[in-house]
Length: 111
Ligand code: SF4
Ligand code: SF4
Image (tube, rainbow, N blue to C red; front, side, top):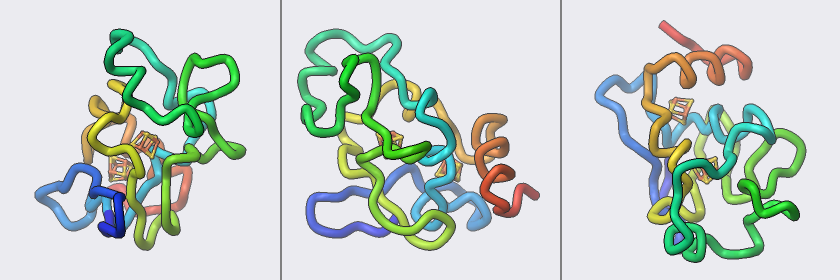
């Protein structure tokens, strides 16, 4: 994902096809996806409140899109809280099942 200002890139993959910086599909797949799970209070405290959902159970989303995602899905995107992103975001690996499901939903190549 393109780096701009305070935005840092997501995971870079070995295969260009699964380049997170030109994707962002998993970050805009479902409002139920970027939920908090195994984080401790110290981790959660580092996520800016403006990006946290009203019920404080996950990231605030606009529709299916995480509010921390910048850019255009499938072209150039970046996570605005990359260093402190939730564990579910760290677990989604380029080319993995969740990744492929999200990419398919956005009509992006999966092979
Ligand atoms: S869907 Fe896959 S390639 Fe796209 S941003 Fe997520 S992990 Fe990266
Ligand atoms: S916190 Fe970052 S990595 Fe996680 S869904 Fe939102 S934009 Fe994507």
